[in-house]
Image (cartoon, rainbow, N blue to C red; front, side, top):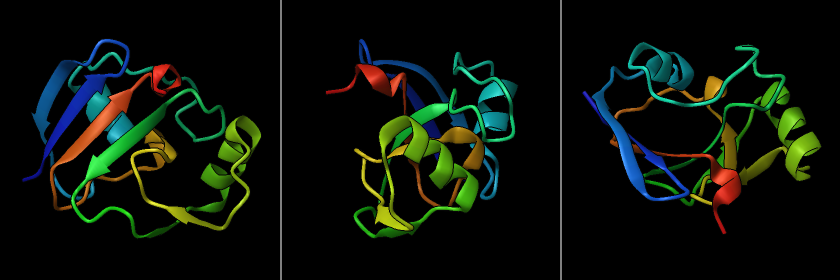
Length: 113
């Protein structure tokens, strides 16, 4: 079971550390554990659940699905089919599933430099 750590970017406070199952949806996991992560639509179209991720095996190409890519294009100007899976790449939590490795989720990434 991978551990998912939620950190508030503004002050580096760990707001939750939970055990997850591989395949768990990140937004559902946060809601179940009452992590203060903003979300609105639950369908991946509003862009409210914006996060940044850190995990082992990063810096590989990441092919985003169309809806996530389109929302991130609208919000952040990301206009590529394939982007780098790095801590600087914004993601929509509702489109992220937990893998087999520990995951750090940076909340409120607008405050990140």
